[in-house]
Length: 174
Ligand SMILES: [Zn+2]
Image (cartoon, rainbow, N blue to C red; front, side):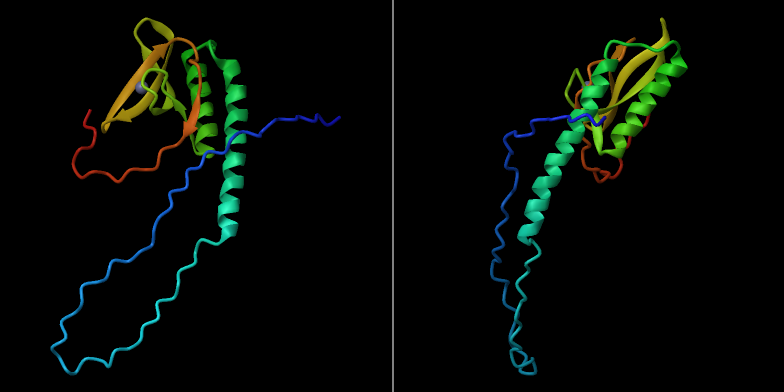
């Protein structure tokens, strides 16, 4: 029996389209002292119309779908909050499973302490036999861990940040 899950997804769509003006400032004229230059070839710059209206529509639709997916995953993961598995290994497997699921959808968890996108991990810490759930993220280029409770923290999902180009040199040297 099919369950008709009716979800009201009629939220306000945030406008995040940055309108880029495509005005070209006049290029600095080339020196014209050579009489052997070509007789002014009329270069007709083809108007770049890569942004067909269909793309804007598709973009909106995808955003809507991605948000629905994010919320659906978040809903399910919320059931894990406050829980702990029986062992360090099981907790690690759980955190790993969560990460793989999120990663496949371009998502990260939001650190409860600083709000940065993070990866949930379980680290063996002194005093906690089953490990501690930590938020693994890099802040100002440094790998940082926040959290550290023995149970799954509240999970809020955010989009995975775009991969940064490595600023030459400053890689984390533990
Ligand atoms: Zn943090």
